[in-house]
Length: 350
Ligand code: NAD
Ligand code: UD1
Image 1 (tube, helix red, strand yellow):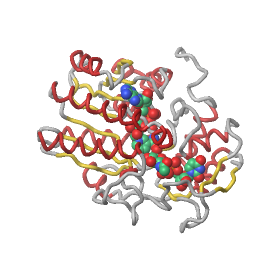
Image 2: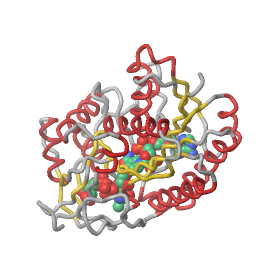
Image 3: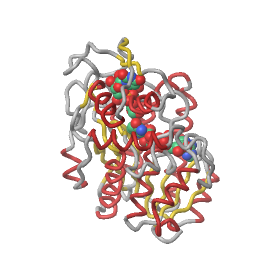
């Protein structure tokens, strides 16, 4: 890897793969580390195909952040200028059933990473946090100074890692850290070659809708239609994964340009709220087919309405989401219809 390349942990996952592509398109060299727990090497093949001439600027190492020696080796072998840290487990239900697995993977993995970064003097970090740290916000839009909390072990890993980052910065102010709090990432690359490919039963709305659309699941369950919202269903801030990827480029440029930046949280959302039934209708329109659904009780821990304040992202990063719910559904349908089993049944030569 050439001098000043960017280490992207979890870079073959959903958001990571789209971000790596944007970095390559903008002239960066990228090193990916991923243990493939929730990713496929087919994503690397697709990524390279989309990157064209820039494909030789990306390298991949299969490795686990929980293995300190493997991480140390990465920093010995490469000259990184910054790290974008996506690697982590993200299924809320699983985190309730297996809290220690989540604390070990997400928190110990991050501590290993930060320690290696510190030893090697690489003190520029963009971290994947989540709107989940707002818990159930009392009002919307959610601004970065809202009180934080967590309703489950997954959320607590995000919250604890944010606190760890703040402590690391307090101890040495050379660190520049941006904690990106994502709202609801959906969509896929417009080429239809990269998208989300969750293993098991999807927890989140749009991966589930996508699997119903391609016939992998019979019907969607809509959790709650008695919320105080426009149509009674939950309202969220869905953001196209390509916009989100561009938000990471903006954050990286901000780190590069700002000595003394500190450790700051920034929301990445659109500032618009869309209900479950509005998302289903938009997806039906994009796919040209009905998504069968049944109404059920509220899902425990869910908020009625959550959407982002985008003021800080605009001010600090000069970044705004551009793409609409229609764009998200069109691109997600293209991905789903052309890859009904995700990266699943295709060999790495594809
Ligand atoms: P993803 O599961 O597609 O990507 C995470 C990647 O990290 C996977 O490729 C996985 O194999 C890898 N990984 C996990 N543990 C690892 C370890 N110990 N060592 C090396 N690699 C490891 O998830 P995503 O949707 O791309 O999310 C990326 C990050 O953004 C995660 O930290 C997630 O918590 C956070 N986030 C996601 C959402 C969302 O809805 N997708 C929302 C808010 C925050
Ligand atoms: C969920 C997680 C949150 C995590 C985020 C992104 C919970 C309580 N919260 O948030 O911690 O950061 O995903 O990974 O799990 N819905 C249905 N049917 C479904 C799935 C979802 O009706 O099968 C509804 C939900 O009730 C909600 C909306 O769709 O109103 C969006 O749900 P989801 O995609 O899971 O995202 P969040 O609830 O925002």
